[in-house]
Amino acid sequence: MAFGGFDQQGSQAPMSEINTTPLVDVMLVLLIIFMITAPLLTHAVKIDLPLATSQPTDEKPQTVSLAIRGDGQLFWNDQPLADGDLVGRLQDAALRQPQPELHLRADRETRYQRIAEVMAAARNAGLQKLGFITLPDSAARPKP
Image (cartoon, rainbow, N blue to C red; front, side, top):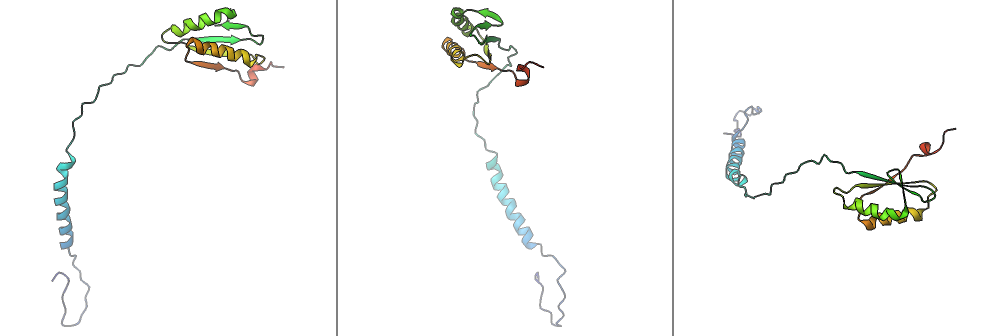
């Protein structure tokens, strides 16, 4: 018998055999389950995906430096600029492809109203990228 038997002599010796019948039964059931489900897992739906190609752009957009002095004087790429010429220059820059980045530098003494006017002119001209250039405190102060 697989579970041992009744011994007539009364000696209770431990059973030294491993019963593998339940193990074989479980393994056969799992084998049948995997044989049935494996073909279902390999079923795939064919989809025509669009092909995308991208090429890196090596061309960096130009930057335009627009500086504002404390008294409101404008400098376009370190060249003095009259107030009337600002809108024309900004519109010309907005029409270029790729559009240049506008880097705005201002003195500490520059009124915020003047900076806001320049920013509004850049926005109205169609420039999309505007950055602010600042100097750290240690670079802005004169050395003793």
